[in-house]
Length: 400
Image 1: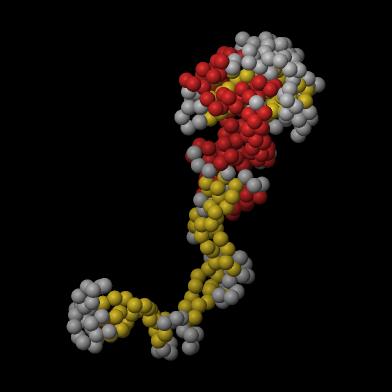
Image 2: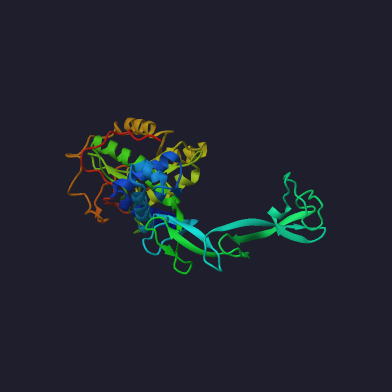
């Protein structure tokens, strides 16, 4: 049992870490809209793009938030700064040392007279006789290529001839060379600068951490609508909610709610690509066994395996399945509407925790699951993250 609880504690600690990101993101309306957009696209990445007018920016951010390309750069910086996303190298950018503009162009100069009037040709080697000359020396009037040394026609590249390099000619002084001198011109401020002076920077792809995306989906698209429903039905609830167990460890549930009769309801949510496995039921039961809420619910999207259903029935855990949140909300409403009436007021102020704290509040346990008997009465604690205390939103309005 102890080992089981330790494993559950590790999972809860990981969940708390991702919830911290959600707390920060939920205070930024632009980041909420951006993550909504990424969830709708089933993507956690923001790819940079270059536009000749606006420069490098993030098109997805521009589309999602209707902001300027320059503002898109600042918005992704906020995600990275809070630790919710990482940067991965995509491209190198040369910037002007005077105005930091990325609108720069390279210019080749003659190393002898510094003229920019240059021509460039490919050097061709004729293998049979070893002749090396610019391609213009091989082209005759009929556009056939003929060796300027042995006068034999060139047959096939790679067989009797090959390209071996490039050759530059200065149209001002007439000298030839293989390596020109480089300088750069800023198209923004018009100033010239050399290679030692230029600024090398990088454009990165932004990758939102998977745990951040998963927790945002859970908190914003699932737990908020469920919490709204509970408040609408008169329950006092907090998300996430804390319940102190008889082991002395305080467990975290996605939602902890109390009805008008003082009964405690613990609700967890699991989303899977196919069906939720039995392990999720066992993880919830480990917490239920230690904390003894009056009823435990497991919301499964899109559904749960038959084995999971058997375990849930055995441990007195009610399962709510649904392919969409509208379906989940509908089923939750049917199950919860049969519970005792609400307490006076939508939220009991005397029982609410201080914002940002997890001060436990006393609860009652009148109905105990068969496998969760014995021990002292647990206390119920609350955390104020995302807990709606005002006018409830329309339940089931967020679909995915």
